[in-house]
Image 1 (cartoon, rainbow, N blue to C red):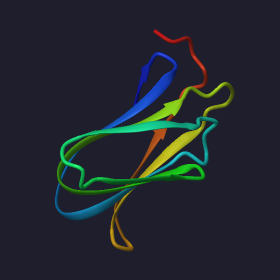
Image 2: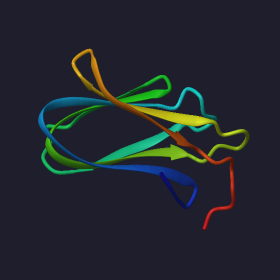
Image 3: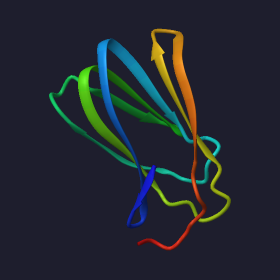
Image 4: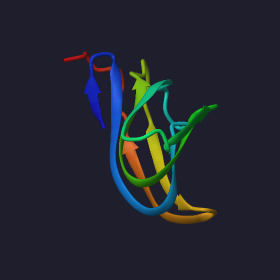
Length: 102
């Protein structure tokens, strides 16, 4: 997680032998979804709904999720990696409150 102007950016560089679903859940944060970008072929599927972003990744993919900088108490972003319904890994990122952009 790093700051880019008025946005926070979560960058992923993944290599998967089979399709993996990556869920970025910012329900516990004051941030809001601001966009998605990827490098590679168009087989990456992205869905933003509510306060979650779902990405399906297969092979080597690089992508970023952009969140607007929160104004108040920022909270956490949870990231889960799934093979179907099976959780492979989960992590938390602490999103700082609205600090000044660099």
